[in-house]
Image (cartoon, rainbow, N blue to C red; front, side, top):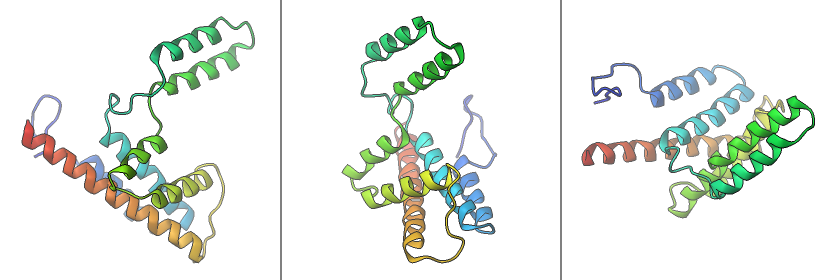
Length: 167
């Protein structure tokens, strides 16, 4: 039923299927590879699920632009200014963590699943190693992360089916 932006049938693998293919491939690797993959898939599914408008920042646009203008006028190091301006641009949308927290209210996912994602993501994605052997605490986090991935996928599919039914 997938269609491209012109309304033509699209026979490419859906990004959600591609994410699950990556997870399958990651199970052949180490726990660290699996954790990085799962954490990335969660971010990818959230970005597919929520449009830019839905992830619009709670910060007033005028405040963000004023801050950007102040930094632009700053007379210090050009490279540092550029980095800060790029960072400020990120304030225009909610981050994945904040977006995930909106799904706890409607009981789509749990706060424990988000905590597992944050812990694993911050460890694995920033160069920290996860233990390569079975460890009860780490295994619980990985299982929570897997459950989070599935709940997000189910919610994404339901939203897409509802959109198709309406339009």
